[in-house]
Image 1 (spheres, rainbow, N blue to C red):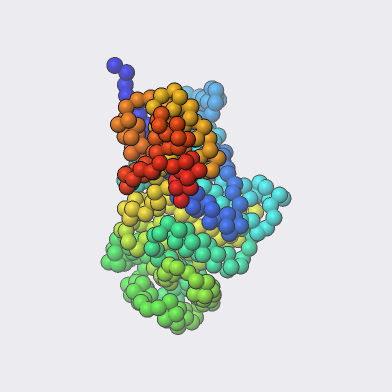
Image 2 (image 1 turned 90 degrees about the vertical axis):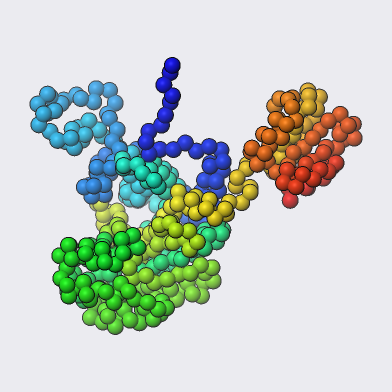
Length: 454
């Protein structure tokens, strides 16, 4: 007996219903990106390994999927090399290409490679899959999609403001209540300065970024393990526990950071963004969260994270300002800011809250039942008219039992079924059944189009 086929661990198949839901998410995000003037690009699934290696740290390099060279990939490798070289060195010899780990590094490569063709500032969005050789577990996959938007070549905080408006618009369209959290890496740098541990900024930000996951006590333990003194840890506590309105938090932080020029600049930037958004008609809450650090240390200014209010789940969108994205490819000084929507987590939130619109769960709106050759020919003529009117339509291909055809309509969540038998053909009409209510009407094709298209 042949072995049942399977797919690699950490990957998934998506059936028609899942794809309809996923496309609803992608189409919504794509339409809002376009509304704000972002332009789409795509980069190859694979990049030269030299482009990817060394950009994600030692652990990130281990998670890169590497592609064996074509043909005799062992050419030039001796038996001694197999014994003496490390696995990493052999991989470098065997593999010149790798699957992209994220969309950020390929985007940086794209900007540098095409810099003479791009008009700055350059606003791009990109919705494509990425691959990581991670250990598969619940909610963590080896292949998943990212939905990124970035603006490069501009230092203006207007970019941060518009990105937050995009976040607000996307989640308003989804019907998901969220809290948009904002902080600034300059504030975090200022905090490290005033507690006397400026060299520990990375350790501090990595530790406090875990506050929601591991709690205050374990964060403090991690800070001590990273070499912070008890005095420095104690000095951090009022900042981590800071409460009040955004304005009250900023007022306190200005006092705390009075001796840090960098920290005060971070306060100014956050205040400018918050003030602009207060008058922009935001539909979702925006909160200054001084424990927000974001894991990636290339952020240099405002940082963002979005939490769903009605579902227990991690952040569903994140991003921030960076000052040297393209410096890794020899083009320093190009500032940028970007966000990324977590499509898989948004999928789960919409599912749990039952927020998918009916149209997103069934691509087909109308099914013509098949009662025989003559009736099917009439249905094909009608279907041409309904499709011309923009109504997604199917004609059942086989003249089979009505029960089977109705079961097909129910299984695919088709809203209306059209019945065209001998009597309907004689009258030049059809019987239209609403599958939700069970109501049936005898209508002309034009009346049916008006009813189904509502």
